[in-house]
Length: 277
Image (cartoon, rainbow, N blue to C red; front, side, top):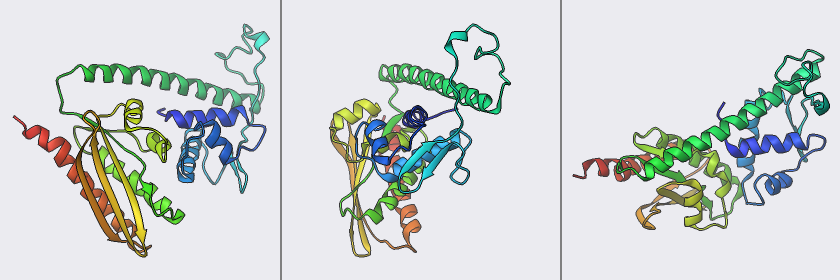
C-alpha cells in the first residue's frame, strides 16, 4: 500500500501517544517540526491515515476526533512480550488466536511494518531513478511541484478554496504526458515555510516550481502564477487571472483557471521541447 511519508509519521505518532488526546498544535510541532501548515492539510492527512487503517470519519474506530481538543488513536493495542520472542505461540510470524484485542494489535503492527518496508523500498527506487535521470541525455520528461499558494488577503474563508484549487491543479497536471508532478500532500508542509527556492528544490528534487498567490477584493479575486526553472532560477512564464468568486461560481472558477494553467504548462514544458530540433 502506497503511503505519503508524512501520513506514516502521523500514524506512528498517534499510536505512540495513544493514551492521550493529541492537539493540533502538538501534531504541527512534532510531526511537521514546527513548520506552518494549514488545518486543511492536517485534515487531509488524518483522512488518508483513516483510509489506510480501514477507518473513516463516521466510524472513527481507529482514529477518533475529540471535538475542540484534537485526535486520539483509540483502536485496542497489546504490547508483545519480548522475553518469549522465540516461543512459537508468541512469535510474530505465527498466527495468534488468544483474543480479539491480540488479533487487532497484530494486524496493525503488521500493517505498520509493511508500510515502513514499502516506504523504504520506494525511497531506494526513487533515488536510483533520479540518479539515472540526472545522468541521462533525455530531457523529454520534466518534473514539477505546485507549491501551496499564499493567501495575501489572509481571509481564512479563502484557505479552503486555495487548498482545493492547488489540489485540482495538481490532478490536472498529473494527466499530462511527459510531465512528472509531485503529489499535493507531499508539498503541503511548504506553506509559509521559511526556506529558499534552492532548499525546496533540493528536498523535492524537481526541475521546475510553480508558485502563486491569491488576493481578494470584495467578490473579485486575483491569482498570480509564476513558473520557475530551478536550474537557472529564471521565470519561464507568469500570468494573472482575475475572476468573480462567490459560492455559486467557486467550482466554475477553479475548473476554468486550473485548466488554463495546465494547458499553458503543457505548451511551455512539453510541446516546446518536442518541437526543438
